[in-house]
Image (cartoon, rainbow, N blue to C red; front, top):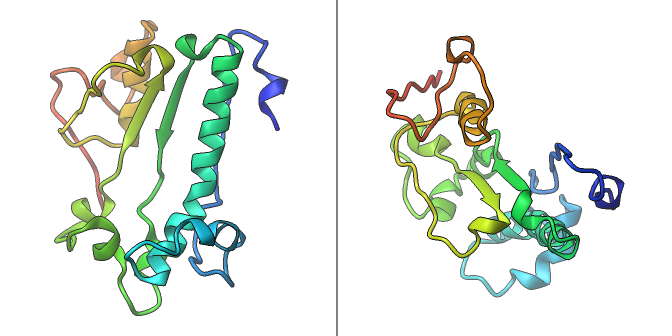
Length: 176
């Protein structure tokens, strides 16, 4: 709905935040779970984890729509999309039963394993290339220095708390 407001204005910078995948993960408690339930009901998971998947399908559909519109406008190769979560799915570990091991496929042994997440940087021109995987610890503080270096932006790294994740700088992650 909002893409036509900026797609023909180059360059643009847009920030979206989705809450469609937030808890509660039941048909009765989440409109997106109810809307997408038929697409996940066949999965071999508890209803709660299926509810999580169903709620998050709405984000998948939004990304499909955005990429399609960027491709149709001929600017997907010149557009960078950055995806990051701000927390683990805490709704799956509330209310007495912990569904995180079912979702993760392992039992988190510490906060780092529980809070483990992904930062995805996508550009249409990279679509056919193998993904670059950074396996050192990173945090949200590293996003700005990483993007600044990727875009060739001049900045004083002493004024940023994070580091470029592609650099050789040592990783430093705070987790209270």
